[in-house]
Amino acid sequence: MTGGRSRMVSVSYNPSAVQSLSQRIGTSAVERVQPAAKPEVRSERGVDTSAYWSISTTMRAENLSLTAVQDANSLAAAQVDATASGLDQATDIVAQMQQKLIMAKAGGSNRAAIGSEVEALKAELVNVAAAGRFGGENWLEVEAGGMPKVASMLASVGSDNAGNLSLNMIDFDTAKSTLVSRAEARDGLLTRPYAGTTMSGVNYNYFVLDAQSELSNPSQSREIKVNERTTSEELEGMITTLNRVMIDMVGASAEVSATKGQISGDLDFLDAWQSPLDADVSRMVDADMGELAVRRMAETAQAQLQTSGLNIGNTSMSQGLKFFL
Image (tube, rainbow, N blue to C red; front, side, top):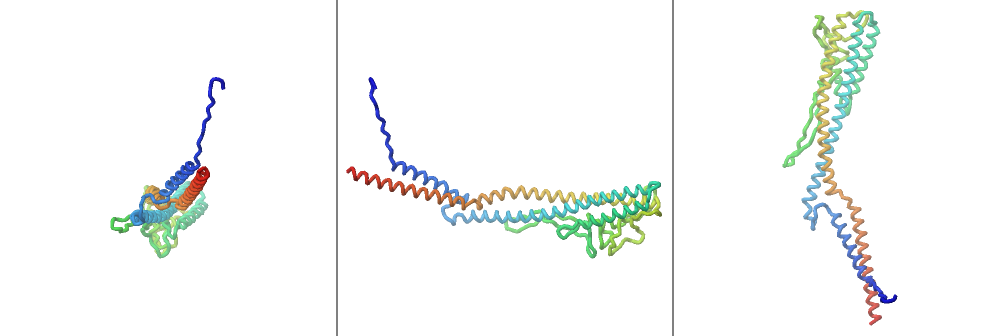
């Protein structure tokens, strides 16, 4: 160029330095992976982690206990749901029976036909009570030789500082929900007699259905039946009886619903408690150690290859210097 100088720029490339840098990068990668493959608590010796693993083992045992309680709660919830559903169905059927009796009391009705419909509804009640069985128990029906009982359901498990285990239970008296009793008729809402006097002064003493109980109702009580000879006074007593039965059934449903709400609350609490416990146990002892080990081996192999490359580069450089010297 005119009036100027041409300048050459020299770039120096040092293979050994590049190899050294690569080795340093590989070593750093190994150092990053190495701690991740260890538990959360950093310990230099195995004996230092005894308390750590003891805590994690205890947490896992508590987690298993919570799982067992959840399973028991779920079974109890299913039993309560079956009972609540049966009571709702039975209440609807009794309401239909009452409507039929009110129609029969009206003038010009076919009481014989209505009587057949009432018998069909009573058969449905028997089926509903029998269908309440779940897990070997039926809170709607008492079989021959049996009696209503108090059902105890596991709600939660706890322990004190000494390790003593405590079981918290939920109790439900099945006498409140029994519809049909084949042992003692008086134990069932549909098989026990209801006696009294109507608002118009008519005496009555009726029960909804005869389950052929071992201990039947007194002879003065009668089963609700409708035919052409049924009087209006008798129908009035039957209608009043069904009204009282429905009141008792609604009360039974309220008791079951309260128990269901208590079980559902326990389930929600256990879910809320177990979720963070699962995460804590997983973070402590359930890390993917296999994946981390493979990564560590790969990074170590890469560092070793880079070290070998650096050694080869240094040897080549030494041979080159000998040639010039």
